[in-house]
Length: 131
Image 1 (cartoon, rainbow, N blue to C red):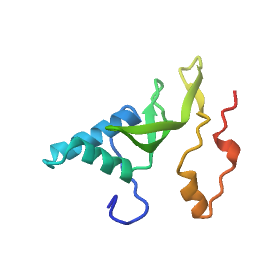
Image 2: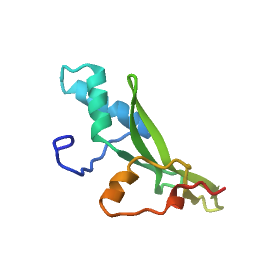
Image 3: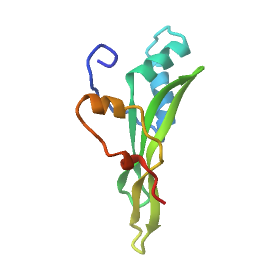
Image 4: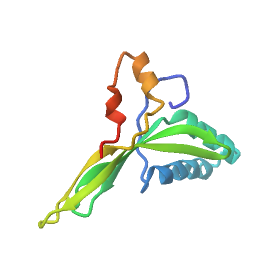
């Protein structure tokens, strides 16, 4: 239902990073036997997907959101991504538990415009990197 005129969609794909997820999606289209040029596949992916939320299994077995990454378009043949938030490891305690938090990268994503149009106003400082 992506790219068919319906707003909003959610799905899962198994990959190690948002960049790997893009490659995985491209490979799934190719494995389905679609006779499309790589650029056309990439344009469809870039048009259909706005954000990747990457969940990573940490060394203690817990799962954490590790990336919030925006698909910002294409440059030439490449789908461009920009990390908006990244998990930052603080420490691993004596019991092996991972401690950390999501940190903004300082990039204000393009998708905030769609939020504003929907009446959702995000504070500007939510995207500001605080060191």
